[in-house]
Length: 72
Figure (cartoon, rainbow, N blue to C red):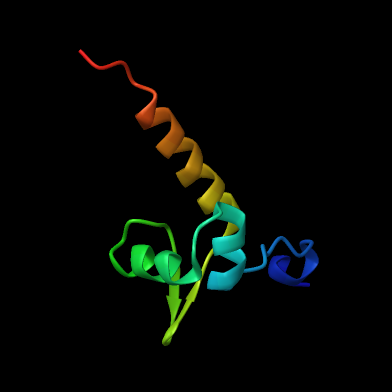
């Protein structure tokens, strides 16, 4: 049996822009605009934008980390 078929399903579901917007607490159109400008991690599947929760969580943590730097 091929190893691909014997491993458990580890695929993370992809979120629609509305799901990502709810998770981040911003408007859906803002999510799409930020994805289009490469300001937010996203996947483009044809004409549709999709998002992974793990990528959005890491991105949000990085935003908090970068905004907490002391001003010199």
